[in-house]
Length: 517
Image (cartoon, rainbow, N blue to C red; front, side, top):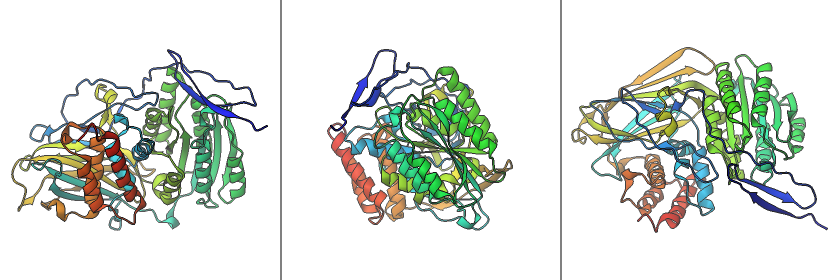
């Protein structure tokens, strides 16, 4: 008689809802976890900051049984009173694939799941390698704003240098894999196992891999092993089975302990956490976990977070860990996404060219009356925290990051040479402590929107799409058809991700169309 299984959901006031696969041929144990309020001892990190501007209090929001940090949309700022703003740079792109997951399932996207800068990061648009000897290069463009014809858009594109494969540092990767009962679904542990197996094939003989698991137990499944012993590593990954509760903090502590014990001086030392984020930790342990991760990042151990799952997916927890660990964060919703993040973008995901990178922008009130940073929104909790500060982020190899500003012009911008802003990019070379800085003070001629490159137009469509998903007050009266038209005209038909974007916008139109015309 074949064994049967079904899915059971249990919920009770004061506890988190638990959804599990139940098997008819065995005893099934389910432990409900108390609902806790997550409080951070480590200072909050700001995604962006307006210098010398007082903060306001904002209301926190919650979204279903999945958790997302509430973020607050940036508003227009008077360039005369507050000309300078700072932005934390990062290569996170989890938001876009998570949005795709919702739309593919025919479900509206939680507002706080939409982080526009991560949507842009996903496509790595218009990348060109910086000049020899440079870590970064900044390219700027000033053009029309398609959703508000009286305003302008300022593009600031930041390209990071590419590490050549022959120059890659020796690497020690610690795979920290959640094998708890909540991972016992096809697009959780099986998806991650396929991804890690693909990743192993990229490793060299001089690289090493360790595997730590947590679930029913916490332990080392594989001690440091040469990347040349692929069969041994693959067999260990194949042997992983889900079950038990989720003592996440114990697994993380063990993984960092292993990374520290086998630290490669001058090498790439990285913990790769793969989970649905459903940690079984209390408030005190959550605080201790944050403090521990902050300390490890200062010692040169990086963190990459890979999120999976739905229903109980804890985006806010995984994002917090990635930020505390000066790391990056991707959401894996399919085998195609696994291939993209772990194979095609191998160097971008796992090899860093700069730490603590942030961009300062000082606007020229002669040309700019007001400006609004699109994306890089702050968490509501950070805005209300007077100790929150702007910290830089980790930037990977060969990445293109986009910062877009909507501008209210102080004077007509057409047909004259414009000096809209000065840019200063500050960072530390990967693994170093020396502060580096590069500055740009571009003088630009206004470019009509129809004269932009296809990739700049596509980037605008992505930003516009994210703004509509967030129901931004700045795109009221705009329609999904506007974005569809722009995406159709600018998407590279040979680029699968860009073609897929168009399908997602069309799906969003079907879902939201009745409410947003």
